[in-house]
Image (tube, rainbow, N blue to C red; front, side, top):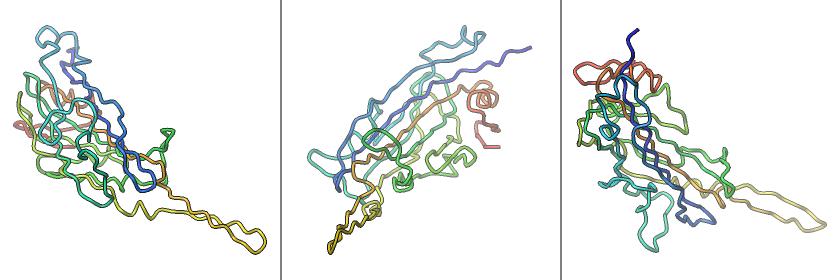
Length: 239
């Protein structure tokens, strides 16, 4: 039986979190990570070295090395609900072989203990996607309200970058109106307690980038990512 020759770049994951308390958004750091090759078949190892495949997330024109959104706010600046902030995201092939690229984006809210808050929708975290349907393909079968999966539709040459897949970030201002009230009556007096759902919450964005090599790419993508694709003259289509 012929062995499948495949080379897969491990996920490059960056995570950003902001704390939201009483109307004030404060930056909170959750470590990001970059990694090199983690898997390749034995019979391909003789021809491909670990450093030959690499993929890098690019944010506002610079490689991400640590936290996503680290430069979103200037010194002393507070994030405003409903305001659009520049968040231009793309991918760069930092290896020395050509690759096919996938991006996974996760958006969610957590409380002060790090537990997800299901009552706050990920849709309130609006990362505006661009070039969808052309340069980038949205994998609807793998995407959910919290997760978005994108494939770059072209072979990404070594030392080359993709068009942007996102260009701005907005936190929906309606989050400030998500409140609940409780009433407690004692004698002639009623105490009304207002609770803001977002008090102490943090919104989080993760962007994970990974890639497979050009050789036997259709089989490698199915094996690594569980997705059937067709590649014709370097153009990738989702089946």
